[in-house]
Image (tube, rainbow, N blue to C red):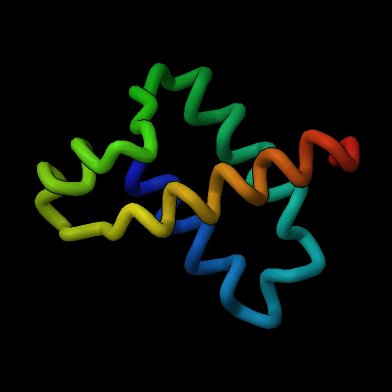
Length: 74
């Protein structure tokens, strides 16, 4: 989940990534679920163990974007 959230955050912070932001996060989370990636909560355990040092704020951003996309129907 950390790697998916890092990619979602990367595109979400770029101006070019805004038009497809909600659709992208929805599709990436759906694919992550299909592939059987494990979930990481906001407790920070996975961030501490991450070999790449991916920050927990990426997961928070992905969860926020996914919730927004779910509510708006993307």
